[in-house]
Each structure stands twice: as structure tokens, then as C-alpha cells.
Image (cartoon, rainbow, N blue to C red; front, side, top):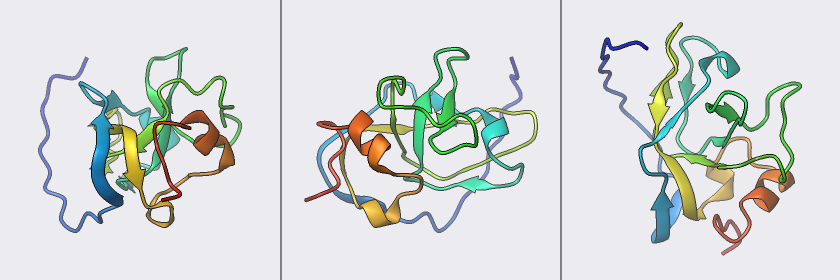
Length: 125
């Protein structure tokens, strides 16, 4: 466990939500699997993720060889804020569990993701 806190200021985060009606966020946030991303990369707010049962960490929705199905994608949601990937650290990020995002402003959303989040995350308003 890494107990060395790191604070970074990220400026310019783009809004990906259509409105705040019915918005629910996962309590306690989610720890992203840093190896699914490139070191130094900023994971944008609105990136599709899901919880991997084997590790308990949240993975990027579309990763080579690890794309889940709606049946295996527990905890699927969208990241709520931008976060920088630092080598050797798995960042914690808020995850949208329910709400009304704008699909064109999200990353990694496909038909399988929409099926996995059906009834919670609504894109077609």
C-alpha cells in the first residue's frame, strides 16, 4: 500500500454530463488499474470503466484482450474526473453509477457498455 499522498492540479476538465438529474456516484470512488493506461496519460472524465472481479480494480472498458461482456462487467460506469496515470500507482477516481451523460463527450462507450449500464446510465435523451 502506498501511503505517500500526491496532489496535482488539473485544469481544463471538460463537462460530459447532460444534466444532474438522477445522478449517482459510486461511494468511496474506484481504484483504476494503471497498467491499462499509459504512464503520464490523463484519463479523461467520462471514460468507460468496469470492476474486475479477479483484482477488485477498475479497468478501462476497451483494452486489447480484456473487453468485458455486459454479463461480466460488474460496476460498469464512467469516470467522474480527469486523473493522471503515474508509474507504480493505481489512482482513485469517482465513478458515475447512474445519470445522463452526453455520449459524444465520453470515451470507450460502445453497445456492450450501454447494455451493461442499461437503466442506470442513459445516453439517448
